[in-house]
Length: 276
Image 1 (cartoon, one colour):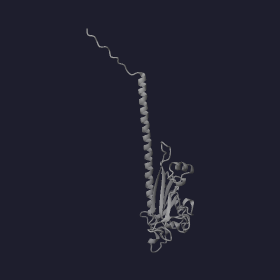
Image 2: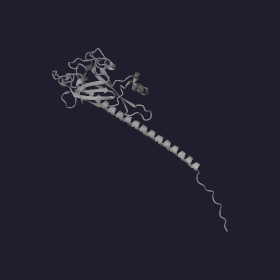
Image 3: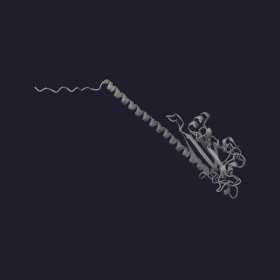
Image 4: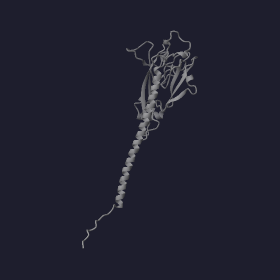
């Protein structure tokens, strides 16, 4: 009778081995999900930053475009001065107070000067828009963290531009989350993360002005100079360039750092139609 070979000593995994293998698997899964979550958070943050940049770029393009066409049509285009002030632009930039009768004020950057507008966060340009035969006032002003835009026809009777532009429904939100002039506590937090955006840890003007001087060009080729805060009686009419700085925050804080993420855009509008 043939003898059978001895049985093979076969056995399965022990409970301890299964528990160790499961623990290793769970650790690997947890690490993978953590990386996936971080990736999703970074994608969301970058997507918000990109959207904020695009909105700020569109806003910058519109502001610069309005400044570029301001001052048209100027008095220099007429052989006989019109009697209706709504048919021409007194200057590229309207001012307040005392626009009509025409008593120009001195531009006030960083709180100086006598103008309510133009200022660090307020700008009114006057120009002919589209096919409209008359001139319009276009105002940009910052309230809190929202930049507003208002457009009204220039009245035939003159008057103060701010009064007309402050009428109900004249202004609409133009760009939100503008952080050029945040509150004191928020400014301290922001400057700790973005010191180069806020030199000296102070609010940054949206609008800064370059002027032609009544004495004529100060360089060859002629270049405008920073507008002084006093000393020229017709200062707003001398504005040649408007430098625009927009500092915009994403709608939500960064999911990882819980800090605001900011983007800064810079542009310059150049007026071509001085009225004097």
